[in-house]
Length: 180
Length: 387
Image 1: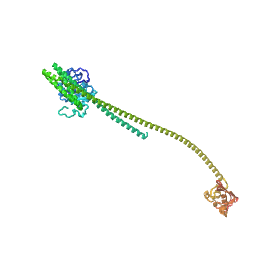
Image 2: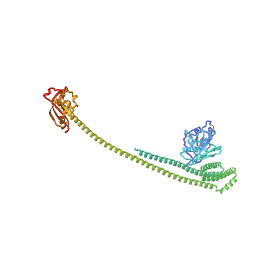
Image 3: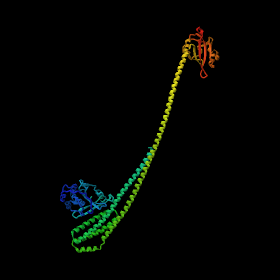
Image 4: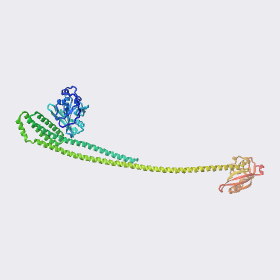
């Protein structure tokens, strides 16, 4: 992930959770997932950490968290979307994982709060507005992308540009067979 | 406050509120434009950031690739792949950011074409290196040695950045003009409103002064009226006192007059002679008790009747026998006293009583209005004679 981002952290000693525990938890929900990361510390990595490393070190950044959430929750049949928001002027990107069923996104910066799910509308524009507001900043673009741990490849699905009319946002246009 | 003043004040406040509404609407519109302008500035900076990021990623990727070609170390290959993935990410974002700007899009398309060629070259070299085809790798690198592709990409990115800088300058100029216009509109509106507030204050002050003047005039008028009322009241009190005094004096005068009248009546009533009070036409208006006693008549029989019905000169000569020459009539007409005239009083019982008649005319300011007849009984009066 290019660029850095601000995260709110609170040091706390909690038993490390393993990837199999997360993947095999039959009661897994977005809230339950987010609760596991209370006390994780922030450290920026220019690449996406392997989940095992992230969970065992309890250190990582926003895309480690969002991509892992996407992997775990999508296996539990939650409809997830990975969203990257480009914040204006700061050369900062921020990645969150939106869960359609919860009408909220998982943000690494909210992991230490009781309300660790941030409610938002489903469009990229709404998510970007909410994320940018949490940084007290403007945003210039927001992209939905997919990520494959095996190939370490991110694929942008579509990008919303703030200066364009909302009616022309790609995620509001009908897409044959696309994710929405 | 007077009606027209209220109307003027309300009207001015209406104008003030209208100006405020216009200012607020304009300021809101300006604010929205300012936000939009900020978004465009952020957009241009994002384009520049993504363009520069694209080139930086290309350089990083190619650097790592060349290291990999030299060392064959998998970590260098991974670094190269990551850098190419980041390049792709930047490029995709750049394409999205410029899809609405034809000029920028043209630059991005050229950049993309050049980048795809570089990525294709890198894939070919990497594949050859992975297959340990050193000759192929050397041949490919040899072909690329004279290539100006990277320089071309760099120049195209510089052109794109220059274009964004131009747009930034133009948008900054528009934002400056917009801010100047907003300042002018808001400043003018505020100034006009201040003037209008001043006018309203002046109108209210003028009205208050007029009201004060009116109040002072009214107070002066009231004071004058009060003085006049006091003066008039004093005059009325004085007049009343005078009237009371006059009334009292008049009452006293009337009382004295009545007293005198009663006194005179007593005198008349106490006279032994017979007394008749007559009008000028010889009608009896009053008699004394001696008359009633001697004549044997009631007062009602005598009052209002002609004197001739109870008195005559003698048995053959009634009072009006001489007409205009009758001494009694002449006495009253001429205002001369008449004394010692023999006459006869006719009593009720038919007797004729001899009397000596005297007449004194009654005057009111030199005008004879009647007369007083006194009858003295003679010694012969005791001898009754037939009427």
